[in-house]
Amino acid sequence: MGLREMKKQQTRQNISHQATRLFLRHGFDRVTIADVAAAAQVAKMTVTNYFPRKEDLALDLHEEFTGLLARTVAARAPGESALAALRRAFLAAADRHDPVIGFSGPDFARMIVESPALVARLREFHEEREDALAAALAEQTGAAPDDPLPRLVAAQLGAVHRFLFQETLRRTLTGETNDEIAAALTKTARTAFDLLSPSLNDYARR
Image 1 (tube, rainbow, N blue to C red):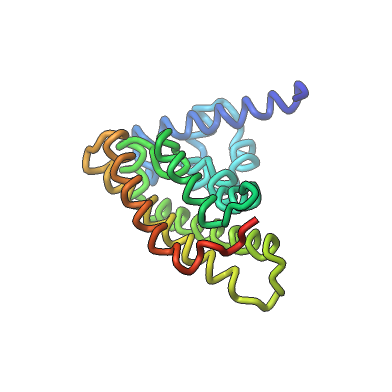
Image 2: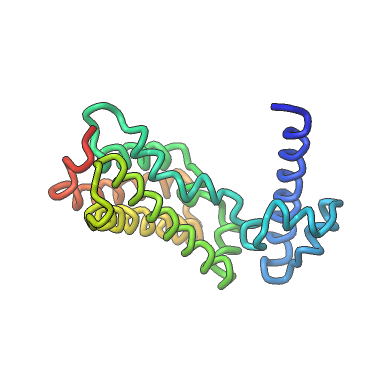
């Protein structure tokens, strides 16, 4: 990585860090872009260049989140189906308490659920992730452009992941520890993926 790219990354990280600190202290809706810029000691334009939407300052895993399921399917092992790959990946993420599946801590979880803007933006993230998964499934299976199957499968798999994400937030807000949440999620995820197994076990098998 060149010096310029390194400086850009450091600037982005500093803006994100300062924004998160302010959001957790004052609440998302009470903090302005100007507040973030002042805390990060940059211009407002710099903040919006890195984060065009205020919501993305709080939800700084946009690309990682929306592309996760599609990347998992594309990288599945030989002989592995899309369902099996996603099941394996989710269980591993739960075991390591991955923030991308919702392990964010009680303060951050509370900030999300208390802000209609963040709830709406997160809903968009889930929709974008489902669309990306549908595109990946279509590519991996060679489906015709008018074939609805990849979108139907993505809708089912997306719904499971959406439910599990919300379950992580819910359990976080009730005061459960990460270990307790991971144990419960593992059990629930296995049940959810097992429900899909009869129809999807061989779909998109590499």
